Length: 410
Picture 1: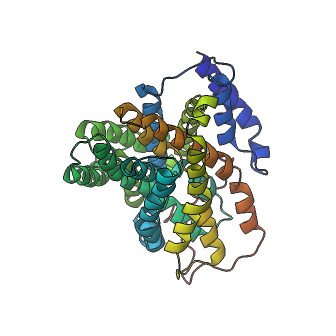
Picture 2 (picture 1 turned 60 degrees about the vertical axis):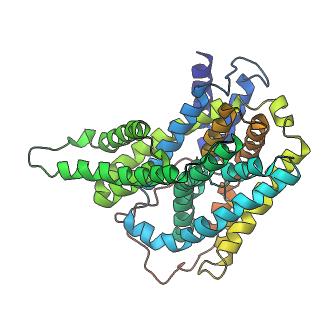
Picture 3 (picture 1 turned 90 degrees about the horizontal axis):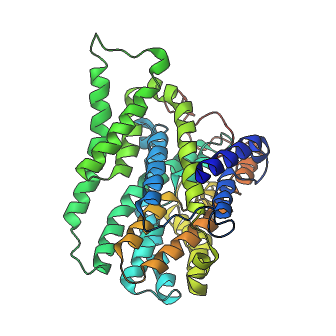
């Protein structure tokens, strides 16, 4: 019961300090990360979770799936159509470049072979929707920038997985079944669209209808069924989650609106639980394991490689320089990388422990830097009367439920 008690205590502290956190660089995400480290082997040694077990992977996987499904409902088809031009640049140019450039220090500085170094690049290439939501949820931030971050972080987790599986198979000296991996991607998207579509077609039947107070549970039921079916069908559940959320918002904006507050709270709880567990993995031994080369790889990935690749991908776009710089900086690493690193650890490949340690260091550093800068960044936008970011009128929030009222900070 120690983890449950610790979760309750940190959650209460976070709620009590949420007002202060909304005005300062104090971060609830950081509180849970530190809380996990305190109850873990690093300090009090009250709990010691074996990273080789499936517990952490399941918790991180559920948290990521929940957040992707919730975020997908802020990106319906019209929003995706309007935001895809910029997001496509970040996904099609920035993400592959990040993968390759992270592999360079992983090879030359951390001493990993090329296959394993590219595996590290694939693991650290996606941004995390859990922490990107901290900026996406700020109304002061221009809508175009929020859409870019939301779509990019919602899609790139699923797109990175094929590369992780391919390089992992090569590191295990096994054949990489590229066709099977692509089928899993396509299957996830198809299932994410088909399931909500079937449900909303059924709702048109005259004898079917949901009571008002139970309506928010409809999207939740879709998410639960989808998660189970994806596991049974062996398809990409991350793309399925985002596709399902977007489909729900497209077919029924009212359902997405009713689910929004409940979904936000649900994803917050899942995120905080996963952060607390992840914090227990942060020990002095694990922080020292990558060596100077591994730490240099983590620092370069966050401070140089991500900003450079996104700035390059957004060259000559219609985004103002200030928005491009914000998108370039705010590329946090998180639960997708945790899940993929756990796959590596459980595979038993050579240097698997080193890969895991590099990823842990990178994510911990990213949480500290990104979760403590979202408020200053949003405030900087709020301090100016910005002109409209495009010639298009600001979308109606009822039709484009990307943004939400500013709640307590993430």
